Each structure stands twice: as C-alpha cells, then as structure tokens.
Image 1 (cartoon, helix red, strand yellow):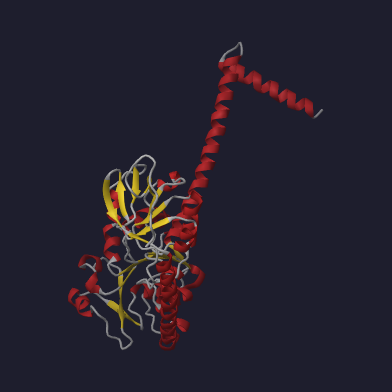
Image 2 (cartoon, rainbow, N blue to C red; image 1 turned 180 degrees about the horizontal axis):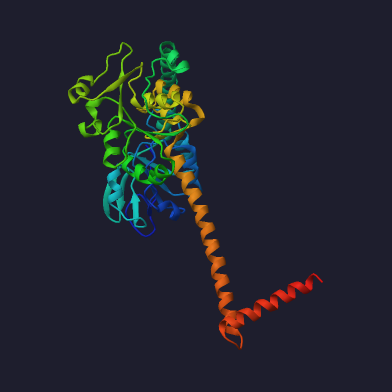
Length: 397
C-alpha cells in the first residue's frame, strides 16, 4: 500500500488535493490537464503511449475507472507513471464520471477515496509497485500460453480447411453479381446504425454488393438498404428481412448440417449452404466476396487487429485471422473508407471555396470599374476593357 501524506495548504482534509480533470475518451479534460491536477481516465491495460501523454502533463494523481492491468497483456504504462512519481488509483468505477464537473476541486485520500469538494464520489484501490510488477509477470506468462493455444488452433484450421482457403472448395455459387465490384460486408456491431448513416454517401456513389451478416441484416433492412446476400443463421433474422429478395446463405458444419434450415423451409424461401469449420458468418461472407472476385471488400463491423488477438476478443479467432489474410489487400475496414471519404470531400470543399473567392473578386472588380467612371455602367466597362486591350497590344509591338 502506498502512503499518501500530502496535504493541501488551503484545506485541513487529508490526501492529495487538485483540480479534477475528465481525461476519458469522451471528456475534454486532457487539453486542460496541468501539473498537480487529478486526472480521471478510462484505460484498461494502460499503454506506454497513454502513460507518456500523462507524464508530459504531470498530474499528481491518476484515477483509472478501470484496472491498470487486466492480466491479458503485459503493459508498461503503470510502471512508467509510478516511476514519474504519480499516485495511482484503479477500479474507481464509471459512475464517478457523472459525479463531478471537469475543473472542480477535489482530492484523493490515502485509502483511494475520491472527493469532489467535500463530497465523496467514489473509491478505488491504491496501486503499488509490487502489485504492478507481479501483474506484469503474470500477464507475460498468460499471453505466451494464450498465443501457443491460439496458433495451435490456427494450424488445426489450416489442416481441415486448406482446400477452402487455397481454392475455395465448398464456397457456393450465389448467383449474385460480385465480380469487379465493391462488396460491403455488414456484421453485427454496437455502433452499426451510426456507421451505416455515415456510409450512405459511399453507398450511393459506389453502389456496392451488400452482404448482411446475421442480425445485421435486420438493421440494413430498417435502414432501407437493399441486400444482395444474407449470410447467417435464419433463426437470428426477421422473417420480413429474409423475404426481402436477398439470396440467403446458411453457415453449415463440415458434414453439411445447417442450423436454421427448418425456418427457411417453413418460410418457403430458397437458400444455399456453406459448409466450413468456422461458425462465423462474417468469415464466410468475406470468403464469398473474395472468391467471387470482389474488387474491394469493406468490413462494416468489429475490426480484427493484433490487440484483439492478444486480448482474446470474440471476433479474433484463428479462422478470422486466416480469412482476412486470404482476402489480403482488398479487405479494408469501414473506418478507413470513411476517413478517406472525409478527406476527399474536405479537399473538394476547399476548391469550391477558392472558386467562390475568385468569383467574388471578379464581381468586386466589375462593380468598381462600372461605377468608377464618368459614363454609364456598361460604357465604363467597355472603356476599361479597351484600355486594357490597347496596353497589352503595345507590349508586343
């Protein structure tokens, strides 16, 4: 336990006093964070980059509403903050964010209690060096064990599905026109409605093949977007969506059994099966788009990166890793598409403003010339033009 013997000069209350700053992703306190403040963050497994940013601002106390180290990955952030002499509090809970206003004076006592003014708004645990170092060693071993198991499963998947990954054996012919087009693979995501709203200009411009995955198909239907394909268990998808005209592909086990087939039969809808050793409809949708010649595959849903693999995220399976490696450079995340679209539209707007500026300048010149002579407006313009023309002619004589 780290002792906290600092006292405020302006208060007799024990603990470390300072200005509370909401430095979470949704807060604006980081821009105002100064030496001696109390920074409130939301950073499970605090990274080196986040730690360095805090060190540059030099708060006295850093309160994390999450754990500095969850044990899934070995992270250096907490050690860096302790080396910089900061007091660390963790697991304070997200509810404290609703209990103080950024910029309000507060304090943290030696037991990890957090106060805004004289009112206690939460309590966390003081972090000491011994616990941080022990957590780091434990996380190192946990990561090694996890990755050994992960890549063992990856090799197993390659053994069972190499014909699928190499030559597309088992991928059904959907009849959808995909070759040479952009394919939009839309998977379940907590922020899917907002993502689709932002993607609508891209969809209008590119007219992609839209593949709805599992219950994301219902979200697409509600957004008024017509799907070419639906991939997923029909039990998770509304009847009206299934009857909407999209071709339906059912994930199936290697022996051909497909969950939800009875529902399709009851609805009287035609469907095809896609047997594979993965039950991820997103993986199957990406393989479909790739095998049938999509020029670009835009993934609208949870992204897969090394951090997701390390933290054992739900979508970070060996099959997902190999599927994305198979799609290669043609697979991009929807956030990248949105950033590029915003950049392009931004530059177009700059040209429009520049053109508008030129037109305004020309109009001002015309008005000054037309109103500046002794004759009528049009006569002044003609006289000025003739003067300019005679001057230019004299340059070439």
